[in-house]
Length: 98
Length: 377
Image (cartoon, rainbow over all chains, first blue to last red; front, side):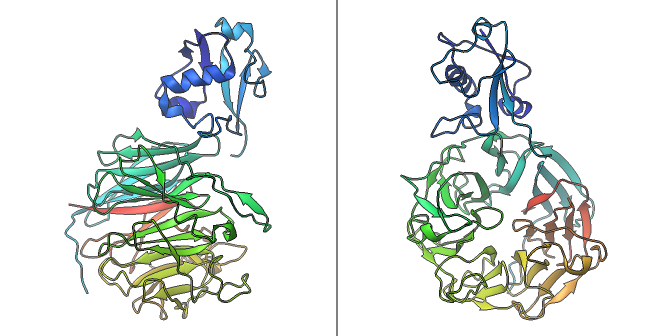
């Protein structure tokens, strides 16, 4: 299972607490993780990726294993530690404003 | 003319920069129960109840990080359900003017205004930024653009105001189900007679310093339009500068700023039972955007504009430098009409006597974006 951490406001929107565990089939890419996340929690559609373009929203980033993975090519797998569930995949809101 | 209401309670729906609040009181409107914040930390651009079923409330929840959410309540705001948030322009939307006059692609940003139908509880209209109008007939689950507005032919000339290119006003005509009025900053006002399929720009008589052509069809920064339901031919407008009125459904406008200390402002509304009694909050501009002389004053005209009186009892008359944004005034329809407005300083003021005296019914909320009122049995 893939461990996923989403920002507090999205946890509230999805009515969940803590880490999410998602069943993502290989190859585990950021796009496939978000695909499963949106399928399991439809209220998050449009909140991480734009509806039409399916592009990551500009003020959100993807992190794992202390690396910014926001600009990985869509087909590139996430680190093995994420695919094996040892490290979580983070969706992080950019720090801006007050 | 009187259209007295028969309510006993009021529910005030407040949208702020950091959540929504619901304030309730009995008909005396002296003691208030404040509930919230709902959706804490999110910008709540607008919260409005259905005239068909007042327990059905729609809310626009938005964030620069996470985009748009539409929330719906079926129990008067106690519980909420996120419904549809996909606002897709019809076809390829093309471009409008950017601040510097260059062409800029249409991009959906947020919902500024939600207007529930007067007759169908599951029908609701949404005014959005970049300016367009959407309609849902399933309680907000799915949305379809009324693209005749954006494709009016002048869309490429529309330009954002300082706050964005938002469609912020939607007025429904009780006497004519096909007729609606909308306003966009900074395109102007438009009217449809066929339920939104086609639209006519209604900006004749508006003059804007920054538009050299006195007959410009669009481009005016209309801040708000108001209408009394018993007189749908008469419209009142607070424009970027100038308070205006029309007596022919917007076909021609004339200025009624009269003796106002400044004719800049954002809000305008009409007394629930007196169609010629209107309210504005003059604001100093262009750069300051706070009340003149640090005095928060509502101005009332009982003559449909032209002659105005300052209403100050209960409002701060020194050191007040808040703003009152375009969605932030509403009226109830109790026998003695109540007037409400919210400020960027987080105060919500109410008057239970048509503006003669005011009471702060909430004082330290986040900056208020919108105020709506429901008159309940």
